[in-house]
Image 1 (cartoon, helix red, strand yellow):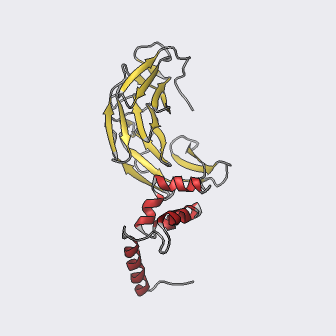
Image 2 (image 1 turned 180 degrees about the vertical axis):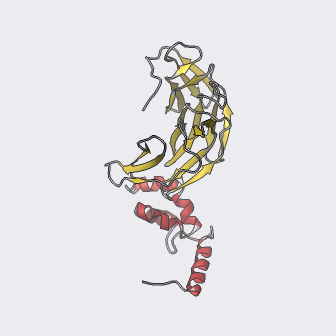
Image 3 (image 1 turned 120 degrees about the horizontal axis):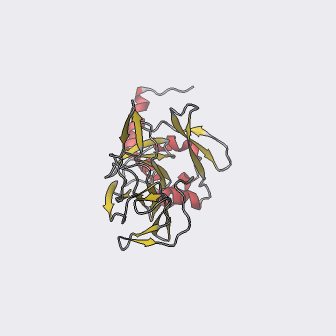
Length: 267
């Protein structure tokens, strides 16, 4: 077993400081393109160690470019994230497994209180968990908090809060942005408000509201537009058959009235 002396530690720190220089090469003697391809071939089990080598490596493995290069190198894996609860329904935690159902393991605990009826979106290869409500000593608290899980670093970070605390709402990714629509607010009121998150600025911005409040609905992105479907609204009796469509380029909503029969929940 080898040990690290104080002098060796000092030399290592100086080396890492030098490696943090943005003007330096990712891998000495190789172009950045070749270096990035080499790093993309490293097994996922070594990502944590890679992130500790230098800031340039850490920034790269957290970037969208890293996902792109791994895909080109045939190294991109598909993972399934599962929220599990204990038998009494009092506690929950996230688990992950690969597409073959192997390598199942638990994620580190998500910060904050346990929540229900939150939103989940995958953005740039990262898992975003948004808003929801928690019950503490019988008191309901609605959240605007947003947390992001980075599988490459196996860690959670907190992002900027949403403008409106909400739960039981629709959310989806469209063109690299995350949208949150409708739901219930902090006072239990049904919401028509909508907002969008830009990961480049870590900022939520309000957009045009729906024509009517809507909750229990779900959303998806299709051909650059946001579609909100199902659930209930204040203008309908029973399940809503209307589909609200948001055009990010025009910043406007339109309504598709001839939808099929929708449900109030989804998997």
